[in-house]
Length: 169
Image (cartoon, rainbow, N blue to C red):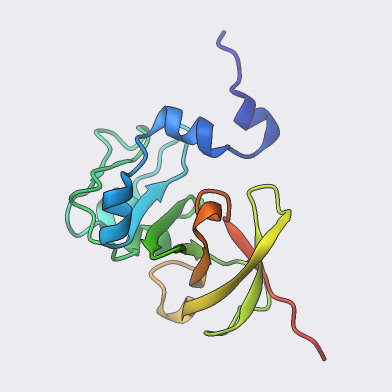
């Protein structure tokens, strides 16, 4: 019987653990356009991301395989982020000294474009402030969850995976 990986015991994966499983996009690729990054470390029967990808950038020989993205084929459309039932796909794009993270947002309230939000890491701890660049409402998403693009300090690109809206009044 094999040992259960630490990230499954804890309930979240660290960037170091993630990139020991899948390749990390190069900085050059991250600066070209948004790129899909799957944070799906379990071999479970699921393949909507592979099926929806218009360029065939997501490699999964069987539905039980981990999704591996061919970063050169990825056009940054975010359909995989929208369709993933496990909310395990993100997009990352380096723009100057900032990173833009495309992520599912399943908490209420849904932030508005231009709104400042609290950036949360994989554990749900606040790590800074960011600005919402885009909101794709649930009704316009291919899945059941709103999708947001948040601009964050570039050094937080691999830590931020959720946001909290703090409205006054």
